[in-house]
Length: 420
Image (cartoon, rainbow, N blue to C red):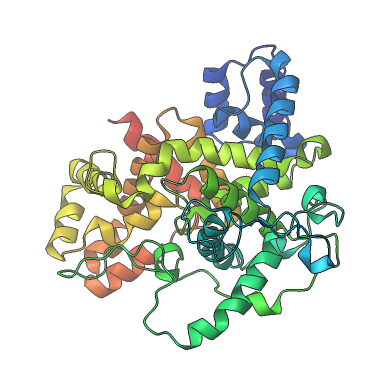
């Protein structure tokens, strides 16, 4: 470790020990990257994502309250209604006429349970392939959720719920055709697909796919759960608490890096609560980013279409020649920037590089405006290839971005910001 890096760590330590965090000073420090050592990055993200209050004296009581609240969410939302350990032969006195699987009342707990299963199956499919080029998410967590895994409690794991639902659905599926698994397939008929379904929507062609197929996962012993199961639980709770948006494919790619950062925190006191802390940080981030996932808002000023067009309007101001070339080839921003913007570039780079980009994004008070500058920088940095390429070559470049040095990209984005 160089002396300059040690000095940088010391700067962070000083900033994070203040009785009241100077948010502006911390943002300036974080913009150039946050050290992992000592759990500095995880702590800074919790502050930058407006989770931890700036007054350190409040942290203890605040965290206790939030983590107890998350435990309550688990109790209320991950419980199979009316079952009460039926598989263990316990009493079924809790099942009433009003709370029965065949009750047609749309407000019944069973009806809600079956609707939840549809969302859960989509989440399960997505989280199982989260960062397939890494083993981390398939490994067991050091801190499994004892509330759910304890056989004395009347809660089931989501993994078991998915297995049971899938088995029951197999016969039905064999008799159906033409069913899509995409929650929000956003397409247009007059153009090539603007928003495409499943892997093409959320996955970069350059990324490894299906290295860990779900049927090849190592079976973990009782009492253990993999990291992807924790991510699944976070997304399921979020969907339950936010029925207006629920779960949309791609959210798994946003929660993944946050959870990874918190679950690898070298400070065990923080790491133990990675699930709850990730949930609240993800919720805060989605409160700023959720409009990108709501189809009805696509064409509004806060929707994804406006943001995609902002990338091209910014490019037009900074590099007219490149802008005209893309216009001439009818390469529209929605063909590639939809994934860049909605997933915060999480599918364009390897996870360590995504985390480095997010250090800068989170530290900027106008983080999503800066994201547009990052996207514009990515285009300008490959302008020579784009100017020389035809439509097919250029689409391949944009959908499988060739530059891996994110520091170069961030420097260019900062230049664009300073020159605005």
